[in-house]
Image 1 (cartoon, each protein chain N blue to C red):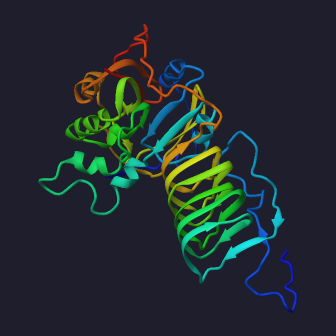
Image 2 (cartoon, rainbow over the protein chains, first blue to last red; image 1 turned 135 degrees about the vertical axis):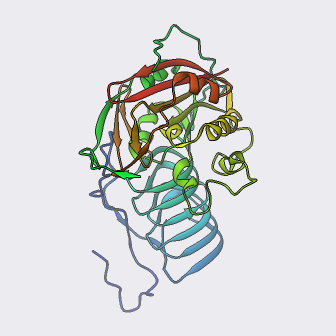
Image 3 (cartoon, one colour; image 1 turned 180 degrees about the vertical axis):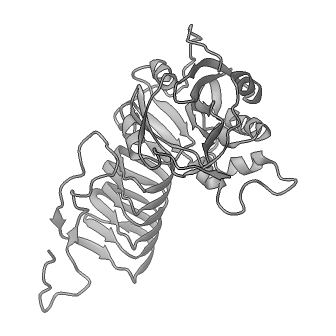
Length: 166
Length: 201
């Protein structure tokens, strides 16, 4: 599964693996399942690492350590692993959360909150998948970016509805 | 608190909803809705609402209140001040739909009045509120989890075998306690739930 490091290869560089597609939400949920596992080269913030500041770049990122600040990888995938503790806003293409996040999340394509995740913040994504058991509090905005719709609350007509006393 | 074994414990139970169906009939295609869900975050419910353009505020209200030392508040502290901590903190948030589920069963009349005052801050004329009130003598000791299957069906899950006496609020109680709201429809169902669809005046 893991690429064996070459003798000269720094130990901190490890290939990424994405959340397996066999992880199926416990509840029946219509719609496509998460994308298949893809191995790509990318960056890893290991469990012992603490990073504070803004992270920008053009590669995928897996976080198993602690990050505070801001993460901007709009063209890439971001995974907060089970050991990851993030206090930051995250902007990515596909974002998957397995650990703890406190911050706003914005995904260009898809955002996945795994069963083991704890998330506090506001989410914006075209598609959000929330597995049973995921601990989430905040808002989820599922308006497609290109969609322009009026946002004023509608006035509900007082139609002749069924009315029964209990 | 009496413990009674329930055959449905931990099994999902189908619930054909009338009130939620009426709520959906009010939705206008092509506009964005703002929804305040006082229940827990559930993937199936988010998946359901993803069919429309919307922003959902998920508060997991009851579980938040049941954290140690949170509720009921100390003497001299209003329940509203506690409720406010677990409602959206963003300024100028107005919602179109409030999903109260069965939470009203777990509050005293004065607490429902306080909750109504808190919720009214997020309401505009026409904001809809959906609630289920039990007409049975006993209810589970904790709120039920409701999953939306489609516009006419819910699946509900009872998480505890323990039961408590139900307040059995009548429609006139709801009207009196939920100040600012009027009842658009009430539906008494065979399973003992009475669904209320309220509209903010």
